[in-house]
Length: 374
Image (tube, rainbow, N blue to C red; front, side):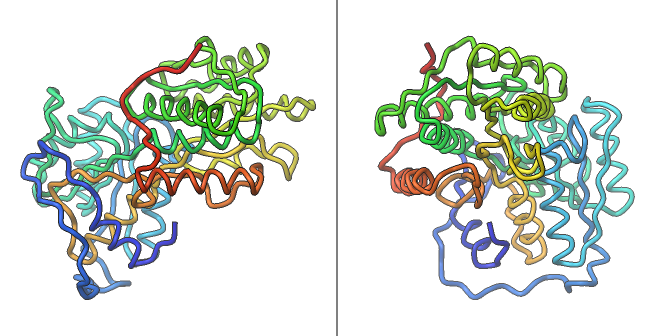
């Protein structure tokens, strides 16, 4: 996704505002308005510092932390801003709030947090620090009752993971043609569940539309329960591969890293196994002999784009405070990587057609949970 102003401005105009958002703004139709002037001078933004508090895992977790930080790095480099991230000692609300306070005291008053674990934290922080602005990715602030309360200094961003999973499932089925697939999830939470359900729908669509014969057995669709147990991910993947699974979709952070490691080891021994990556393009993480990768493709969310866009919006004085934004196929918020070396041109053509059909409403990918497993 190119970081051009025209794409970003149009993206921000078409995002949907969900109902029930406290203090929210009404969405507007795109209009042919002139490009706004930045409210701060690029290269001399001494009063605009961008901070991030990481979730569980490291800054290079190949998932939410890394995707968010990469977007911050790109934007702060483009616009001449200072940046800083802090890693809490743990994952409690108190520990998150401590690092938010440390960033605020250091002058970092534009703070981005990745993941649903920050929901109650940002609920408190948006009131405690009214002079700060918060971007909560994959969550919305609430007091613990799941009723969204998005203050005017906060933006919540969600993604249509089920659509990303659908494209990954379709591509996997088309490329393999026949065989068996599995799924390893981290915690059984809505974003991960939607990846799983979308993936199943993509496999089923390929079986029904293109006569592929891909099997999905329930015993090979598993939630490990965490996002950081690398060893467990490797063990789960080994068990699935031993049972004849050809490709595993991993939506599991560090657990997925373990599965990637297992697949690389087997590929080095001559086995034909695959991993489908998640959140970001994980192709390079799957390289095992200097050239080839066991990453068939990746179900991507524009995490970096979301962080970039919100920093840009603040720079131009158009920060959409009080809103819950949805990044989906219609605004290029989800999809496959721009380059997929392990997918044939024919597969890419069919996935591209499906993408257009989803945007047009010809294909419906539901986010409501179901199961197509045997």
